Image 1 (cartoon, rainbow, N blue to C red):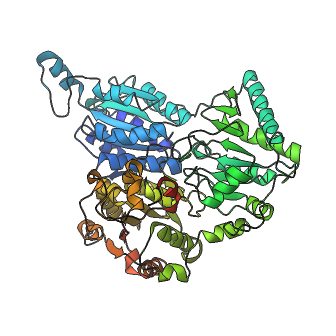
Image 2 (spheres, rainbow, N blue to C red; image 1 turned 180 degrees about the horizontal axis):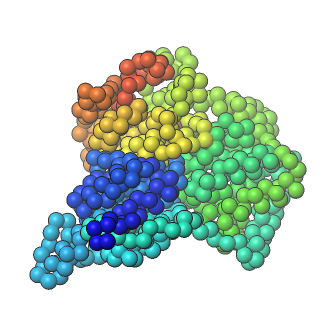
Length: 609
């Protein structure tokens, strides 16, 4: 009997549980402590190991994978790997992304040697709980697994917390436990939802009644209700896109989304009025959202500085349903879950106003009521058409601008490409510029609160591999400074044959958004030397990195565009499946003027004397 291999080991147990969650790819950087687990993972055959150049890139990939699939995982080795993964885990915690962080640590024997004679081996710290303590700050459950008999209970507890809280968890496993015997998985993992008790039903009914009262108390000039919904990130994290569509289609209520939720539903829905982002919104969107609509109903929207760009608060004519509660004006209703609120609100609005009773084109209404102002579109269709710029004005421009690039990309995505794309936007000007792109449901990923620069490159890997978006090409927008942080993740794109298109927005090698935040007067001047010294980057030939990452059997291409005609030519090539530029990753260096910036940021720039 002693020679019979165990029916299950700790490594196999974890591998089976990850596969049960539908995880098909595990991202990470190997180390000796992790090796036995990866060997078991490969022998099981359900999950593919994706080695990345950096632990941060592995975390970014797992983060995006989880946003698409519902849960993702990364695995690293102790301390040197775990601390590099920490930034990605912190971002997933803030943005409510279910990420499983696996950290393989030194074996029990090495810890005993340290306790006995003070011997530290590779990656160890004199503080045995250093990794665990750090990860407790950015997870909803952190477990140090040191006993094979307890491993199943600890693993299941962490994974159940990840599913239920929709936030990261941490599993630290000693190297010598991977091959230790343990019981096999029994009952399946189950997400534990917060139950709706009697007290919860009362609060839900009160919240819905308060929302209807707020709508009635804020009529338009014709006496009719004029609410607008602001759908946010939690509609994505809680997988409530279908419920959101049901609500707007049943009631007809116009809606906007936050930047982070723009990919939750199809951007061509007739009730969709655009992305609202505070003072950084498109002027047309800002006008109908803040000036024409008389009350705003935030559903799963987070009041972050990015979502409310330039605004410090909401107001008494707002509803904000997020983080497990609902504020209606100055009233607050705790313990009201978004999953319960959406259908209850839909039923109440249909009962009060009839099916489709709140349908309106706020662009057309405000245009008609305001006496047909020349700077406002005559209707929603005209607003959407205005976001595309493919005509003579674009082609005749001398050089590319942020707005020109994104307007042209919008036309390409909407009219000229036969392929599915997943737009992955980095922080800063990339995110501001891309927020008005029209994309189908699931077609847009970004960080909206953590805003770690360079996130997009690793995230594109996870987005491309996640079930549900597999086959869609990643289209990445990243600033030159952000690209310099994580450029090596293009190696993973090349290795896996991902046909990503990475637009590196090179605005004269400096941190444009940082300059905007600390000294926006730079953009009102024309002296090329007036940027603050610490925002200056070392210039790179970004397109030439494709040759560095390419191999004999793994092509990658690079190209530079600086004029509208060059961008037009490139987009025509992207639409041709036989063009060799589409054989692998494509790095596109987009040359922009240092004083250029997205029009959405104009409110920050003082007028030049």
